[in-house]
Length: 265
Image 1: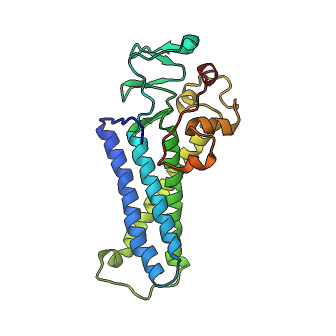
Image 2: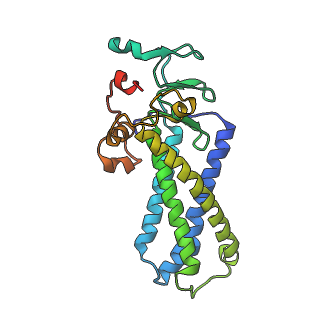
Image 3: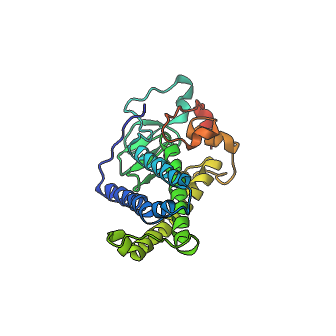
């Protein structure tokens, strides 16, 4: 989709991302098999709810894969520095290369990333200028999918009418209670973790500060927004069209923001 592929060789990151894919696959297979399709066949729920569930699942997976393999903003070895913006560049003391201010050197990946927010083991990649928007979409659709799955798990036992047809020959039906308990446990853990992460990400964009800048406390006015929230979100997502902020299939076009304004914090 017009984006440079970035693949990080990190066994720890592979394990973390594999765990995320397992939880996604577990819920995408179990919830429809035990809850959605049986209740749809007996007329308890409309088919549109199943379509919405799979739609959110696909958006979540696409955001995960693209955030993982998209170049987060790795700087080239010999970057072309505009003549009028040289004062807004600095020398990295780890790789001895010039980089724009607000860039950071990732010790795990071994290179500098433009406007790096943090290195995320769950996507096995850095979160930087070019894939931050995909990471936000991943947080949003993961939280949405988790809430959706937990809601149907709750309704299956406490709201929907009991199922009349149950094929006890199926493994998932015979062990339904244990399987649904595991799904609910993973869902609650995922919901708590992703809610906290998503909240900190939104606050960071609104205040126009990265996670690294917050931790290093390098900004004197770190808690005060410097730009309207619409502008900061538009810069992250590469468009002012808000409907496109939720589409992971598109190509991001960076908004041209002068370095002297983007780097002045």
